[in-house]
Amino acid sequence: MKTFNEIGAYVLLMFQAFKRPDKGRVFRRQLMMDFEALGTNSLGLIIILSLFFGAIIAIQMAYNIDNPMIPLKTIGFSTRQMMIVEFAPTIMSLILAGKVGSSIASEIGSMRVTEQIDALEVMGINPANYLILPKITASMIYNPILMVFSIVVGIFGGWLAMIVTGLSSSVAFIEGVRSWYDPFTVTYAIIKTLVFAFIIASVSGYKGYTVKGGSVEVGKASTQAVVYSSILIIVFDLILTQMLLT
Amino acid sequence: MIELLNISKSFAGQKVLNDISTVFDKGKTNLIIGQSGSGKTVLMKCCIGLLDIDEGIINFDELCFSDLSIKKKRTTRKKMGVLFQGGALFDSFTVEENVMFPLNMFTTMSLEEKLDRVNYVLKKVNLVNANHKYPSEISGGMTKRVAIARAIALNPQYLFCDEPNSGLDPKTAEVIDALISDLTHEFQMTTVVNTHDMNSVLQIGQKIAFLYQGDLWWEGDKDEILKTDNKELNDFVFSTELTRRIK
Image (cartoon, rainbow over all chains, first blue to last red; front, side):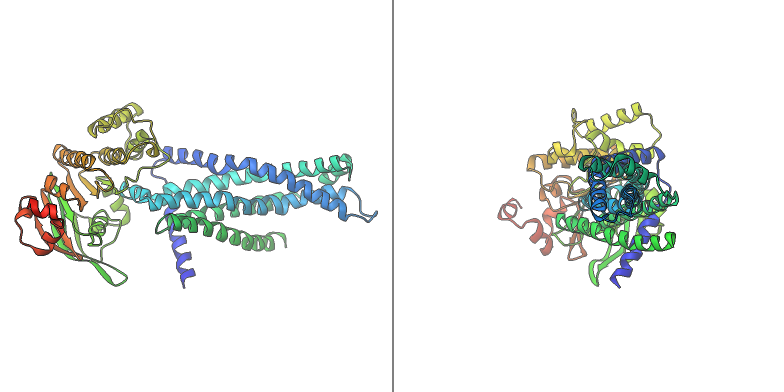
């Protein structure tokens, strides 16, 4: 019963959030701030993780190919496919759920317990719209950009690993990256990233917005935001994969 | 003027406000006093619409506020200024941006006009040269003054203050009381102050409503409170040896 209540409260909050902003200029300013807080500030982490993951995928593929019938270009192909279909959209979203999700929940939760949200409310402002909508919008615009960065840097990491370790030639790797390319995989990755971005920002916004109590509860809400977002990402990954790839 | 008629409010079956009826007059500092847990904050939150009442009517002058939709309540709230217990300043904004916030949201003033208005209200609360400081960089008294400045930035008709003196030293508390009283008279606002600070009661209490266990137990002004023989009120107001001696 509690779960249904939570889902109901979440849907109602989203209805409040998805209203026309009171002032377009203020919304755009909030959006710019959230681009920086949720997007630009995550770029470094995404680049580092993608670089290493790309390298790890390529090295693992190289070590697992011991059959001379399998061409070396498979390493480049597999690295690209792994980065596009799973790592960049899903694993990056899980990592962002931890970084961005906890940040959103704790920021909004702190505003709730220090009566800043009440202050917005009594000023005649729709707090859900003012606080949550720019974060959802910023995440849904910026996360696909981060995903593209992740794919490019991951493939570069794989190529770099092959050059450094000598497990494959540069030519074979690049040939693999360019082989059997299906553009739909990128569309599939973008759709997943958009859905996951919405989940991260909206669930975290909801958990922060509905905090009751003090700093301990803000911490708990932040943890719950990460846990719920991560579970929903994996569940929707399965659903979207089933829907889009079969 | 704010009129409360037969207001009741319960939480999980426990009655917190029981059939409260009173009037808060325009141009006066109206005080709600009572022990912690007596329902002061709940009553104030009901007045400003942060909590829905179970029964009763709340009128803001001619307008029946309690019957309005959420959207219309939001419109009416633009006529209210609220000072929260902790100030509720936005952490990521400077003092100037905090005070300018309602102007940004609800006016079409130019930046220069807004800055003029911000400096005017900051001067009114005796706060100068603090425009570019963040809430974390100012004292508790200054926080309250910035919050008052923000609350009056849009020239509200109604001002609500929830324990404006909590956490302040007696001298600063007196300054805040005087400020609220002066602004009320100058701008002819209907001001409602929640407090359990007896200095405030005796200094600015033009109309005092005493809540006791969710009931409106006594009403009067600062002169009448000294003469009352109401036992619960006397136990609350003159709870210390010092205040009993003063009486």
